[in-house]
Length: 232
Image (cartoon, rainbow, N blue to C red; front, side, top):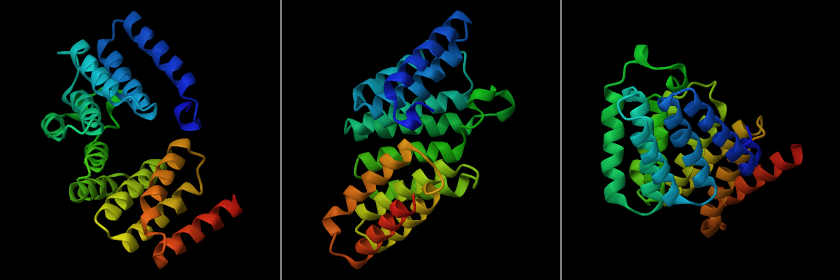
């Protein structure tokens, strides 16, 4: 919640406390989860891509032999995002492949509750981020569509983020009109939320649209955003 209300310093303190409690309990698997699912994503928010991969690798080493394939997949996916942000396409592809392979061997009956949410849709979402950051528009769009197909309607924020990922990939492919249509769907979902992360993704999409400001679809999208802001 601290992350999603724009309080990264508070979020970091909670993550450190959670990591200490996991260590005190001797739960190395959950400690790895805190590193890879929490602290590495916070490092991305703070603009430290090298730290993302380092934290994810620390999770892998610290929990080696004590986690299920599902958790391994999540740890690899977190590392892959770090490599993508560093522009290392080759290592990203290698680690992303490890994530896919690990998830193929997962068994939900063996998973602890804290990793049960990580499914094919979540992995596709993580990989879509990586492809987007590497400028690989076609696979980014494909993975974003895969994640949207798998996320149920109850995952509102996750679906909104997925739509904005897809919209960014469509802009990268110069499908500007379609991107604005996709972005409008995301705005409709975000209108019912107060999400700092959602707002960050929306701002990122708006920046992608700036070179196409004269396009009618972009102007219409801007008008839609203004209407939402007035309504809020």
